[in-house]
Amino acid sequence: MTTVMFLIWWLVFHLPPFDNTPEHTSAFYRAMTLLVVASPCALVLSIPSAVLAAIAWGARNGILFRGAPPSRNWRRWTSWRWDKTGTLTTGELAVVGVESFPAGREQEIIELACALEEIRQHPIARAVTRHGKKNGVRELAGGGVRLHHGAGFAWAA
Image (cartoon, rainbow, N blue to C red; front, top):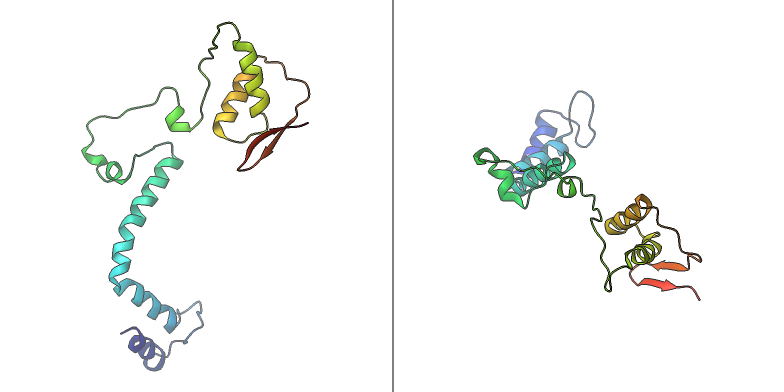
């Protein structure tokens, strides 16, 4: 059917076979559009594509869905929840407390954690270093930490 329509658009309606012009789209372009629209695969693929587009739009606007069903049924929702800490909606993690065993070594733990995480780009590392800066943690001398992606840390000799 696509080939027949290509030939009709080209030979009967005299559309350019492959060149799109400002006045007309090419016969080939129209034939490919017909092929995509007439294919049952296009209909099957359009539904998850639309759902994923809705989830992505929500994420860009601070709304997170757990999978597709909530995004399809939003008109039936009876309640809405907000995340007062912003952890879920903004994706920014935060350190809320530090404990050590034995007690009393919290400052030392924060210093070590900040020294290890200062070169990392992971969201948890950003939260740890932000917590250290906010609490005025002193930087450890030497800074002999190297990052090997996929292999973790290595202390310089």
